[in-house]
Image (cartoon, rainbow, N blue to C red; front, side, top):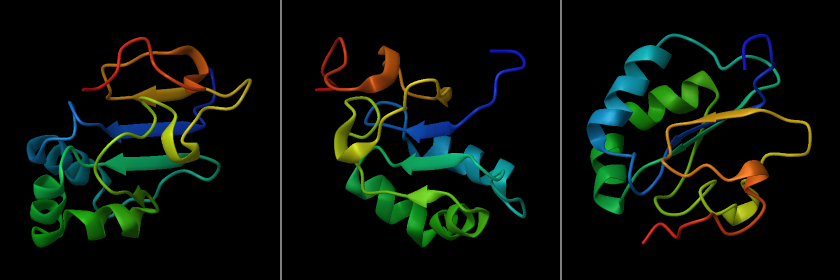
Length: 111
């Protein structure tokens, strides 16, 4: 991917959206902005993690940086809620799923 533009960044998922993961991401993003033209999705691994992250102020750090703070659950892993990578676009992800284009069901369901 060296030299390729990143269009979408996906942090989280049901398996990689632990509170410790979100704390690490917030530590990197605090005081910074998402680059122009990049969409950053943050998806906590559960509703409990989401509440804990919000109580710690992590969600606000993400929002202030320009990230899209989402509900817990499926997102780019399955291409849910329109969370897909368009033709010719590049994404990086913390998810353990890797389906080209994420245009529907991944190779394995998240549950």
